[in-house]
Image (cartoon, rainbow, N blue to C red; front, top):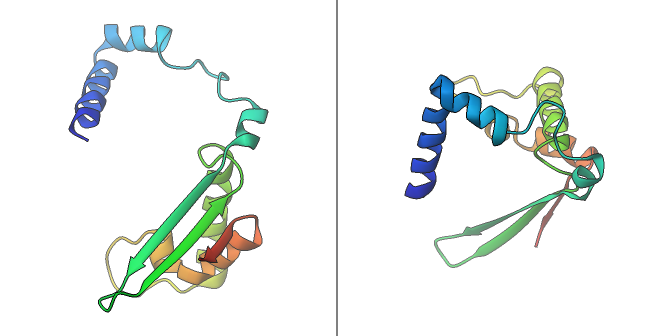
Length: 123
């Protein structure tokens, strides 16, 4: 974790300095329009497994599966469904603070994601 943080720090520093930014843009970073192919994105997926352990030893497992590439294709769907849940379904807590979509929209967002391609199951 420390190595990754140091690496990202140096990368950010490299982007802040014009000569190294030019080198990174020219030889390291992808050029505009050079993203992954449609086939690559269709083959991508994300599966998230959650494990909850209770005080008395109870264990509950859940799995959420996103069938296409979450970095390019599914991010837009998730953002749209979150926005629709916010506008059409309500349910935002009245208390202050910053909430993630899952924390403030809960099952309303989950139901929208499942209806548009995500699978969710307790195991």
